[in-house]
Length: 290
Image 1 (tube, rainbow, N blue to C red):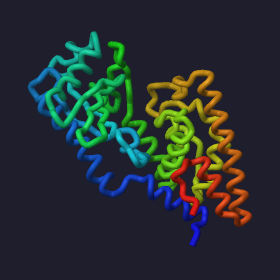
Image 2 (spheres, rainbow, N blue to C red):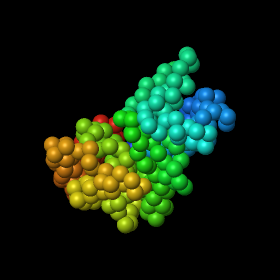
Image 3 (cartoon, helix red, strand yellow):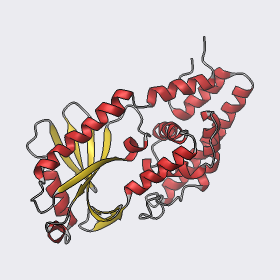
């Protein structure tokens, strides 16, 4: 028996959502594997003792989609033993010191990427470790990649998103997962954090029909591109977009809105197969049409 559009969305979400094993075992294990080395390399009597780590990004917000490779970890270090005096003039030295702590482990290779250290696992996947000094409360100092430092409040941004998800009855994170599939199927014009924040800023309420929520997002999103960092540090999250990229992103949203409207009309008229074909055009070839 052929699935309805709503049933197809339920199956698609199941297929792209992290499994219980991945969420509760695999992701925490990757985090643990990365920080065990930091605990050994930066003991309590070192200049920069390792304090603690927490999951960040999509893994923390439950917006990660399968198949996934990366897990983001915030690694917090103490500056109490003179570490800040040592690394404050050049944050790159701190980043390189963290990177060097992973040298010599046959199961792992490491590469610096911007403001983080990427730890590759032998059997696939990687962890992006963002090393920071705590400045005050939830405010941290992150190496900027050019020798300077950036203020960041990722835990505030995470809490803001979690609050939004609760206010929307847990329907925000699944919608973001669907939008990440759309973004991935259409040139990945939006960065993950930007897309998450746009979605969370767009809705005051969400119904149970994912297809309805997607149609509304595509219609409203062109006016939500310039959302600000909910952590309060980065200003507008769209600054990475060139004029050309911004234009292409708006065009992509507009096309998706038109196709979503066609799909909704087909569904209302009872043509679920046609509607599912149109949603596949939006969400990618893995969207089920049978």
